[in-house]
Image (cartoon, rainbow, N blue to C red):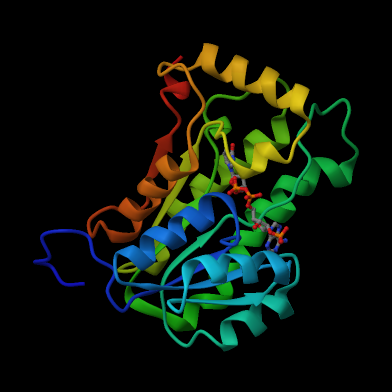
Length: 245
Ligand SMILES: NC(=O)c1ccc[n+]([C@@H]2O[C@H](COP(=O)([O-])OP(=O)(O)OC[C@H]3O[C@@H](n4cnc5c(N)ncnc54)[C@H](OP(=O)(O)O)[C@@H]3O)[C@@H](O)[C@H]2O)c1
């Protein structure tokens, strides 16, 4: 990319997508490749990554990695010498009220979603190109808490704070967060149907645009943050106006 490109392009850029074998990360992978870049996909399940590779083609490569395991993250980056973009959707956590969660479950959004992303960025530091762009995955619960999920709310707020802090430390590398509302996609498709239906109805009622979002709508916002050259330290809410209500 250079300062005079009329449209966002990602020609010859390498974007690391840990969690990119499914959901929002996969939609970002499709867009990066369509814009001329390539993707390094990570996740824990080889068959999922292989299936994504089969759909994405030769501009994709993949390697298993577990963001809970620093050694596995180091091994992942050993085969990615230059990193132009990072977006990590990898996370596994329990959401619930303080009164009901044990200490391990309560800490899980921090351990998996916050520290997982922190570890990925830390491992990539020496490989970042000077105009790299990092997008952290947050969630609009950060600013508008849903019913009784305080540790999850706080973990997302911490991720948005991490984006601001890293934007200062890593400049001219840009660091932003994307913060989706409830998205009708792979994550919720794998959850209990009754909980999904209730959550979508509640979210639709609580949201200015009256419906859950889609994975492609979040992916479009991630591409914006990967390519815009003058946005750093920001959080972009892709939440249908959830935070306004
Ligand atoms: N969908 C929503 O409604 C929504 C809303 C707000 C925020 N978010 C955030 O979006 C992220 C989830 O993305 P998604 O919605 O696209 O869901 P998804 O399709 O379930 O994507 C998660 C991906 O991460 C991988 N993964 C999970 N744990 C991992 C680990 N420890 N190491 C490496 N890879 C791991 C999974 O593959 P393997 O299991 O094979 O590793 C999977 O491919 C979460 O951070 C979530 O909080 C989602």
